[in-house]
Length: 254
Image (cartoon, rainbow, N blue to C red):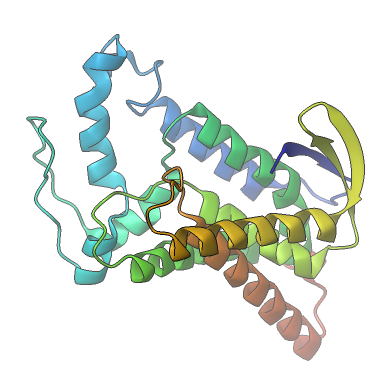
């Protein structure tokens, strides 16, 4: 989207500890990875880091053909020293904490910082953490099912963050968001408009790449965004049904 969300007008009633911990975990993993220039032990130049990055992503990223077969592929790159053991289903989880560069990380964390506290406050900490994790895994495996022969690693928290946005649409769509349009113009929008627009754009890009496989998708897994969002909507709906049946206020559940 041509802009970034800045804040939500919903006042959370407790410190969004899970959201802050998730952001801290994502940032820490990036800073300690070879993609970060702060991790000097991987080398002091980009050229020196190319092989460490390639091996690191292959080891911890989610590769569709590995996820569906349950078997680790032999490392196919040209770098030496790629001696590692990988459990494919574990990589579906670890891949959610990897990011290709600082922009990739920042874009995901901004959305998580704005929308995460609201969803965490409405669902409760444990349910929120469960929703984040499960929608991230759903997004990864859905992407794998759509590209079963792909051997390029999938990384990033986008699927899980999309799940948070999907749940937001169910639990707090009436909030208003301050959005920095074109990165310079602050405007106030209903939350459902911003989140709904996000989904429509991701779905359009997903369909476009699916219909025209040769088109440049920018190596972005739009399918993971779409299915993560749908998973969040379903998760939010199920939690609402649990609240309706039990008579429990979501805001009182940890």
